[in-house]
Image (tube, rainbow, N blue to C red; front, side, top):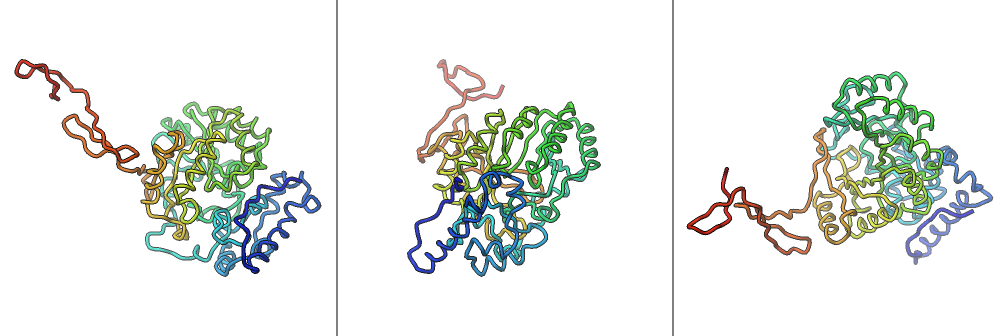
Length: 411
C-alpha cells in the first residue's frame, strides 16, 4: 500500500540517533505495511479511531521518548488524555523531540505546571452558557458544543477542562433546550458547531443537528469547527461531503498548525469539501517552537491557499492551565503579520487575535501602520517602512482671501 507522507529531518549522524531512526521506521511498518494493515483498514476512519495510541507502551513502540515525555504521558489521564491516530503518528519524527507534529500530540511533564494567570476556562465559555452545550457570547452568534471527543488531543487545547474524558455526545434533551433557546433569541443568526470535533459524530446524528438548525428561521449561517481533516482525513468521504452540502450556507473552520501536516490525504479531504461548495478557512494557534517563525507561517499559508483554504485567524495561545510552555509573546504574532503583509497575497494574511481572557471576545492585534491623523491629513507606513500622506476630502470648500482653497470646516 501507499504509505502516508511520513516526512523526516536529515538523517542523524550519531549511532544512537541512527538506531532510533531505524527503530522508528521498523515500528511504523505495523501501520504502513500491507501485511500488517491492509489498505482498506488504513483508510477506514473507524479503524483509525479504534487503534489510536493511548498508552505509554504503545507510544514507546514507535517513538524513542524523552524523560519529560514519559512523565507527561503517565500524568495525562482523565481530562485531555493522550490519543493519537495511527495516521497522525506516522507523521511524527522518531528521534527529534522538537518535531512540530510530535510536540502537538505527545504530552510533556510541563503540562502539569501551573503558571501565574493560567485559567481553567480562559475564554469564559462556562459563564456565557445560557443552556448546557451552548455558549452565547456575541450578540448575533452562538457556539454549540456537541461532543467532547477529538480524533487526536492537541496538547495546547483551550477546552482541556472538558475535552477527552468521556467522549460523549450531547443528549437529545439538551439539544431540544438549545433549539428552543435559539428560536427564542431571534438576534442569533449564526451558529458554530464545535466540540471536541463534530465530524466524529455519526453521519445521521450530525445531519439531524444540521437539519434542526436549518428549521429555525433566524439561523442564516451554520459553521463547523474541526481538526479532523488534519488528524483523521480518512473521515472525509463523498458520503459526508454530499450530506453537508445539503445544508448550505455552510462554512468550515479547520485547525492547521504546521506545513508538515499537509499531506496528500489532507489535500484530498479539503478538495472533497471545497468541491461540495463549502468555503474553508484555517484557524492556527501560535505555538512556541512550532509555528512562531514568519517563514514557517508563510509556508503554511501558501500550502493552505493551494488547497483552497483561506487563512482566517492566527490565535494567541490562550492561558489555559498547562499550556504555558506553548505560549509566545504577543509580539511574535505581530511580527508574523508584519512579515506577511505586503510580502504575500492579501488572501494569505490572516487576522492575529487575542481571545480576551475571561470572555471578552477576539481582539485583533496588528502592526501599527497609522502614524498620525490630524486636520485631514493621515500619515501612513507601508510594508517597506516608507512613509506616505493621505489627504481626506474636506467637509466643505470655502473661498479664503478670494482664492478657492481646501480647508476642513464644520458644517
